Every structure is written in C-alpha cells, then in structure tokens.
Amino acid sequence: MTESFRNIPKVDELVRDVGFAEARGVSKAKLAGLVREELELLRGGMAQGKYTGAGREALYETVVERVCRKLEALRADRLRKVVNATGVVMHTNLGRSVLGARAAEKVQEIATGYSNLEYSTETGARRYRLSYVEQLITDITGAEAALVVNNNAAAVLLTLNTLAKDRRIILSRGEMVEIGDGFRIGDIITTAGCGICEVGSTNRTTPADYRQAVTPDTAALVKIHTSNYRIVGYTEDVGTAQLAGIAREYDVPLVEDMGSGILADISRFGFAYERTPMDAIADGADIVTFSGDKCLGGPQAGIIAGRRELVAKMRRNQLTRCMRIDKLCLAALEATLEDFAEGWSAPTMDCISADPEAARAKAHKLRGMLEDAMGERFALSVMPHEAQFGGGAMPLAAINSYGLYVTSGRFSAARIEAALRGSAPPVAATVKDGRVILDMLTVDEADLRHIVQAFRTCVQ
Image (cartoon, rainbow, N blue to C red):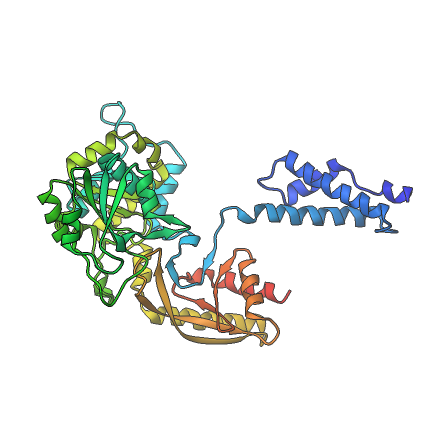
C-alpha cells in the first residue's frame, strides 16, 4: 500500500501538464484546486483497495483524464459558435440575428484599435457618441429624432419612465404580452414607475374604451405590438392612426412598441405585410420603439424614434447613461443601418427570402456527405420543412424550407440530438415524431462538415 501511495503524481507536474494541454481560460490556482480534489479522491480510492498494482503512469493518466473532464464541464457555458439547424432564423437562445459581413468587419476594426467614439476629429473636443447612428435612424424612419439604448425592453422602460413616471398609461388588455423568460410588459411598465389602466378585453378593445379611461392622471396612450402571438376570430383593436387622433384629443403622447421592428417590406417575399416603424411614425405615433437584433439584423439594441422634444427629454434622463450601448454594438448598428439605407440585405432578410431550392440542395449535399462518412448507420431523407422567423416575430408565418430527416435502428432520436448538441461545435437540431430534423435554411454550407463530424460522435 505504501509503495502504491508513492506512485501518486505531484500537484506541480500535473498542473504543468493539464495547464498546457486543456486549461485555457482557467487560472493556475483553479487548476491546482481541481488537481488536488482529484488526488484526494485517488488517495481515498487507494485506501479502499482500488487501483491495486497501478503504476505511476496509470495513476497519472487517471488524474489527468478526470481533471480534463472537469475542465470541459467548466467551459461548457462559455460563449461559442453553434450550428443552427433548427430552421428558426432569429433564434433567441442562439443569439438571434447573424450580423452582416460589413457589420462584422466594422466591429473588428473598432474592437482592435482606438476610435472616435466620443472624440471630435474636427475640434478635438468631446462629441456625442450617437449622433451619426441617430441621423441614420431618422433618415430611414422619417422620425424627427432618435435615441439608442441596449435593448428594446430598456427602450420601453426609458420612454415610460421619462414620459409617465408617477402617473398612469392606458394600454389594451389584449396587449399585455410576455416577451420571454418570464418578463412581462406590465412588469416593465410598473418598473418604469408608471401605473397601468388596462382597457377593453383580451380580444376586443374599442376607441370608446380609451376615451372613457382618460383622466387628468393619464400621461400617455401605449400600444404594444403582439409580435409573438395572434388573437384571431371575434376581435377588434384600435389602429395607430385612430389612437393617435385620440391622443391628440386629450393632449397626451402615443407610444408604440413594435417589438421586432421589421423595416423591410416582406410582402415582396410572399408573406403578409407587416407594419414597420415608418408606418407607425406616418400614422401619428409620437414615440416608436423597436429592436436592433431581430428583423433589422443588427446587434442587440433598443431603438427609440419620434418627436424631437420627447426624445430630448429621454436623453436627459439619468437612466439613459445606464442603458447606453458600447462601441462594438454601435459599430455593428451603424453598419447594419448603412446596409439597409443602401439597399443591402442583412443575413436575416437573406435567409427569410431565400429560395427553398437552396435549402434542398444543401440537404442533398449533407445527405451525400453523411452517407460517404457513415455508411448505412443512419436512414436519411430530404423532405420539405416549415422554418420559422423566431425572435417573437410573425408567429403565424411559415418559411418554406427543406430538412434532412434522420433515424437510426441503433440510436434513438434523443440520443442523436444529444450527441449533435454535445459536439464541437454544437449542432442544434429538432426532434419530431421520433426523427431528428436538420433544417438547412439556417445552416451555412461551410458548416456541413461540422454536422458530419458531429454525427461521428454518435457512434463513438
């Protein structure tokens, strides 16, 4: 037994080995702690009669293997690339929109050097960081002024905290949405310091409902775009133009939150027309808020556009400093808006408008690659599949696509999906009716090789 304990490797030599091989991003102190934990477990096992006759090399490899597994578990949540084979274009859990090439290049340029973020090259004095991006927004939307914060929930909160703090806003009961992960618009409004007067019913709200609810304590009328669900059937709501007229009658502002904030006319791609922030401004909304990282196809940002005097009040609100975007988001948003102004499409719009035949061709190519690599271990079929917008946008719209449907006599669909998810890089797929579905709409052709490699992990 004593001789066996002498074969236990030392902490220092293990730290040097694992540190160079596996421990990127982990401090030496953390690594040493993991090594000591494993050595303690090893000693405990040896005291119970385990590892009898194991030499120094075998014990060394045992500890290294265990520490490497712990390191991998520690790094499992680090930010990394994922191959999106779900067919959900703006997948909230997978980072929503993919940046365009020019936006990514602009981020690279600004991230790797100094910039004129708040420096005027004309005067040498401090400058306002959002001046150019705000000009882009006003040019595109037709609004008098604009402001950018770090996400759309922040845009709503800042707007209402500025315009309606310690007062009440009027909102249709059918627009009391939950935006995801348990966050509800009503809670955001009350966090802004406002009271809420809900009017109408879940499915029907009329102009009279708003008029009857106005009191001297009313600070604003608010309209929330129900972008992540639809109520159909016996319904009625009040459009922006009519609601703007009511707001003018009572001299209060109309705030419209458009959520995903699609700027492009998607009806040219065969989808139903979706109102844009430009429509809301033209219809008389005083303030419009929308996201930068959904249908616009830019970085996470909340965009506020509307009347000059109202936006000016928001700029003076101390919350604006807390919610401002950093230089990398600003660089990406500027480039994305420039692309839109010049008629370029962001990857999000390219994906939504893509010819389904392109997805079909990728599916057949992937099928051939998998058959070459895996033989007959999997049954592979190319079939039509309905992709989705995602990101809480247009829940009733389906995008025609194709997917590779996968089954196996040896492995369950759940086992295959888990193996794909656990590969490097992870591949996100869906399971339905006992089949794994890899929708090709959201897969870049360069990533097909990663999917093939991921399938190899299923049989290891």
